[in-house]
Length: 125
Image (cartoon, rainbow, N blue to C red; front, side, top):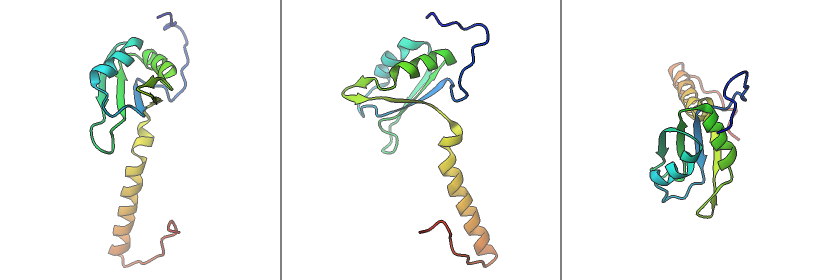
């Protein structure tokens, strides 16, 4: 690859080595994933979703951030079995946001019950 890896190469803050891939064919294998994503550099790990909630998704972890950026740039919109891949950088702060919100609501409800408060929930419509 002819990427300049030396010097002051500035990457956008969301760029990292972990890619989150959506809209994969449900029957795709890890080997097929390695064939597609391995063309862009050394891969540390691929995790293909295998539950009902995670089918059609995968995480691809590259050894090098520049390889991950190259793969993201080239494979977003790539056609695999008549499905166009959605390739994004994994952002942990967004991934756990729903979990955090659910935990905050649970804590809030517990405090209301503990102190006998019954305030109307302003989030409900």
